[in-house]
Length: 344
Image 1 (cartoon, rainbow, N blue to C red):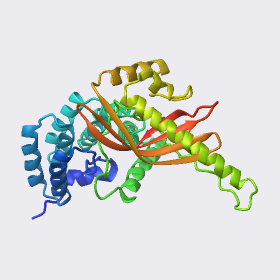
Image 2 (image 1 turned 135 degrees about the vertical axis):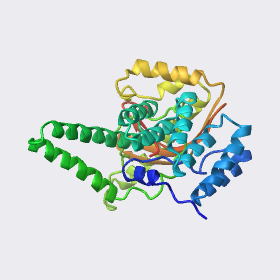
Image 3 (image 1 turned 120 degrees about the vertical axis):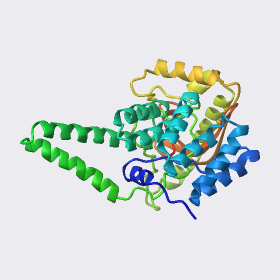
């Protein structure tokens, strides 16, 4: 008989977004079947069988981050939040560069009304990946919950304060609308563990908007020259993306950092000098790195552009895949990166 998702899992989905690991990862072929089998059992609701298979895999490979992450998702779905917390907590300790375990740990804390712990975990997720939209959304919900609790306490102390009552009602309506507004029936799909040891997500929290080319009438006299210019610019941006990936793969730190413009915005409250030092330490600490770019699409608007692609990252411990957007500007003769967004 198929297991149903636990009540706590359904409750968490009403407000907070739990990230699920799917089989759509860039995994070594030797292990692809194991991940696929466990993921299929999860999708079928056979959580007990999935957990057994995951545990069997981890006997031989106890440090495997993907399977351990999946184990945490299974435990959550099976109604074992405390076990899942232990699993995700250990992942954050051993792989602090991965934001997804922090996010799911925060969701579980929130499900137990431990909102301060949830806030800390989400802030850690955002620190490792400042463009992690799911973590920002969850952090907003956590702050809203904390705000609601504070208003409730204020009302207990002063029941005649109509202003507080109105604010509390507003907050409750906000969460009621969020639940009815249709969170996904299943955890957010196709989200792979994202390596922040790579040039992960350094843009501000707002979702990055890709610069779309301005539409021009087909009869405009300048349409043909503009097309030629766009074609040339696209080649330049493609070359810039490939050079950035090659420099990262080669651990050529000077060339890698030179791909970022002076206006590139690193982590919140982090100086450019501090960000560069952090990048040098992270990249230099890897014995080997491979970064491959595929499915590249480019949009250009004057001296601004965006490049969207799939990034396959591999080092000695991790083998991961994600979508990425690099936003470029051209202040002179060279296109340089001013924003990085993961998952977009």
